Structure formats: structure tokens, C-alpha cells
Length: 288
Image (tube, helix red, strand yellow):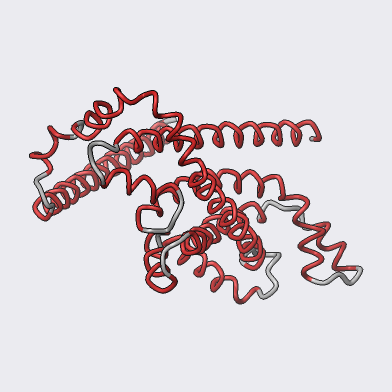
């Protein structure tokens, strides 16, 4: 009995020692993180065009100017929204095409980088690192390079977003593929089906609901990305917003109309995609 009590006391003391050591390491890590954040903020503030603390009181100056300039012209907002609607459609088209192209490449990359499904298993690390690179490079960097080569317009934005989308969705799709049942694939292989046929008939029907859900979520993100890329000359409603803002006071009512269009569009597509995803989940649960 004494030996058992001694063992319990020893285990308890060891556990408490590990907990103290974990808290110590966590505290040190937190201090290092805070020190890095403080030094990074100080460096960024010193190199900023104007000091952060000096400009902080003016953070609401631009919204106040927009509201003050727009309020007397509220009756003009519907007309401005109609005028800029074609630019909004261009932004949505950029997002839609880039999502479709990116999702198509993501499907192929995910199949080639999933253990048990890959056509060339030894090349799995190569395809995974390729997707890492595609995710790591921001869309705006790719768009700036393409604008320099191809000129301004929606094509550079579409290519940049599709490139990034392929890497992002490829990672998500590959995780979905790992949960697929391999029995249909093995059955198709036993009757002589090619690798492409095994993937299309044995894997895609199982994972397509998750693919579609992730693609819808990415489409929402790409609408915002295509609007942002318009600021660097990649077309769409972002270019119109940049022009309206660059004119300053007197045209802030047009900027407000564009803001409203973007806000309404993002909310509508967010609600629509959420509704579709919920229907798919309910349908999948009903089958189960």
C-alpha cells in the first residue's frame, strides 16, 4: 500500500513538474512574440510616410468626407449604381472564370498529390510543393507581373486569381481525397480501367459535394480579390473605385455607390453559397 501511494505521489509530482515547465516555456514564447511584435511595429512606424500615432486621430477623416459629400446627393446613388453595374459584372465574371479554371487544375493536382490515388507516387512531394508555391504567391504580385507583360485588363487578374485558387483548392481537395473509399477504385482497376477513368468514376462521385462546397467558398473570396486587383489596373469595379476615389471630394458619391454595390454583391453571394452548402449537407445527411 505504501509503495502504491509513493508511486501515485511520484506520478503526481512528475505531472506537476511537466505542467510548470510547459507554463514556463509558454511564458517565454509569449514574451518573445510580444518583443518581436513591438520591434516590428516600431520599425514599420519609423519607416511609414507619416507616424502611426500621428495619423491615428484621422482614421475616420476619409469616411466622414465620403458621408458629407454623399449625403446631399443621395438621390444620385441609384443612377450611379446602375452606371457601375457593368463593371461589377466584369468583376463577377473574373471571379467566376478564375474559380472554374483554378478548380479544374486543383482537381488534377489533388489527385496527383494524394497517397493511394497518385498516378506517379514518387512525384507526390513535387506536386505538393508546387501547390505550396501557388498558395504562397499573392494574387496581386502575379497580377502586377502580368500587367507589365500583357498590359492592363481583366485577363491578368483572371490568370493571377486562377493560379492562386489552384494552389489553395488543391490543398483542400487533396485532404478530401484522403477520406475517399478506395474500394470503387480497386474494382475499376480490376476490370482494366485507366487511371483517369478510376479517378473520374471511382473518386469524383464521392468527393464532388465537398469539392463544390469549397469551390463556392473560394468564389466568394475571389470576388473580393478581383475587386482589389482592380486598384492595380486589372479591370473590373476596382478600377472604377480607384478612379472615383482619386478625384477626391466632388465624386465621393460615386465611390459610395461602388462601395454599396460591392457590399450588396458579397452579402448576396455569401448567403447564396451558404444556402447551397446547407442544402448539400442536408441531402448528404438524408442519404446517410
